[in-house]
Amino acid sequence: MGRVKTRMVKIIGEKLYREHKDEFTTDFEKNKEIVKKYVDIPSKKLRNVVAGYVTRLKKRELEKG
Image (cartoon, rainbow, N blue to C red; front, side, top):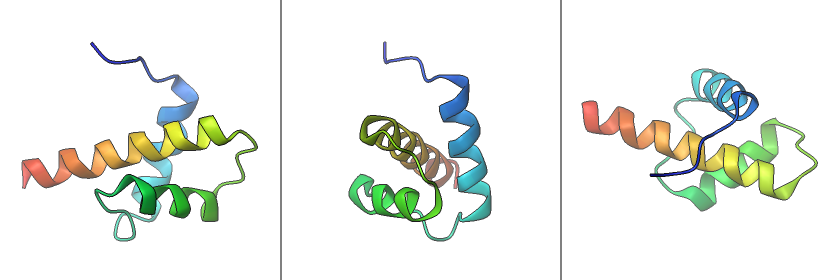
């Protein structure tokens, strides 16, 4: 079992993913920089959680095809 994502992380992540879907990749490091560019999140840990969630959304979309 993985960690449960908070509602705020999911809302921010899904909104970013919808608006900038083409920019995100399956690479966490690149997604971290993209999240940093579009959202001002003061906590580095929270920014990384959002970037990880967006990476997961991208991978899920690619699997569905």
